Amino acid sequence: MSRSSEEKDVSLLELERQLSRASEQTTEAYEALRERWFERLLGPDRAVVPTSSHTAYMRRLSPLEATYPKDECVPVCLATLTKLGFDLEGQQGIRLDLDDRPQKSPRACVIASDPPTLVHLITRAQGGLHDYQAFLHEAGHALHYAGCDPQLPFAFRKLSRDHALTEIYSYILEAISREPGWHAEHFGLSDEEAARNAEATTFLEALLYRRYMAKLQFELEFWGRFAADGGTPAGYSERLTNATGIYYRPDGYLADMDAGFYSADYLRAWIRSAQLRRHLVREIGKDWWRSPETGERLRALFAEGTRPFSEEIAARLGFEPLDTGPLVGELSVLR
Image (cartoon, rainbow, N blue to C red; front, side, top):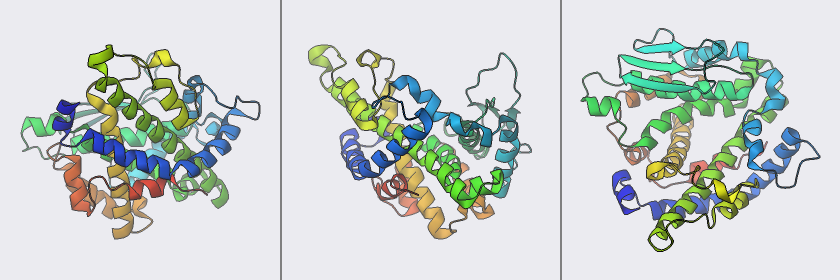
């Protein structure tokens, strides 16, 4: 635990305290979202506490699939990025693999082979809003790596000293899918329909945040007592189930743990992405998600590669590193 805190240059215990407080502050909003979207996604005959086997289905927002067809995913996402001033197809260094091949994995990913000259972005749309979110998420990674200064040392072009930093830029582009205006503009929805579907993405964001918050708490407890008990699932199921309202089996604890407290990196990125969005709204306006000025500001950050720590970005945006106010605001939105 102490080694991971040193490597991340942040106290994991203090991070957990601040994030736990944020989780408490958003519980009422989350419970309202959860009841509404459990009903819409799983139906009236669902279990009061559904099992985690339903999570993949819910994350795809499958009942909304007809609104977000797979054939439109690539053109809509490319058009979305064009509004920011990014030409993903023409971006030097990015190799796109967007075809729908039978043996191709549906999981979107980026392989930064030799940034900024060789960065692969791979997606395979299956149908549903999740395709669009995954594309925008991975585009954030690809543009970051392909946009780094080629004069940087290899370590600051390729190696991720701070995984939270790389996730900031994927999160901020994925956050466009939480803007009602984006749904209305690209899918012909009424303002009411667009707000409803954007709320679905807020529900998923809140669900994932709470899940990772509970994961971090369990992992801190697990390693804190490891020397005494050799590692047990105590608290895993209880923490994740209480946090999300979804039942997690106790025996899944080992498969759900990532090396080096990566859960903390995702959570730090959640804080920072919300701070960045608040900054962009303040500096550019509510239409930040379709403004070329946003693209210019992101390019300036991309150019630094992986040199900065996430907490350095917070200072530049005018926030304290553990200021969760913007995150609480985003996860408390009820439409």
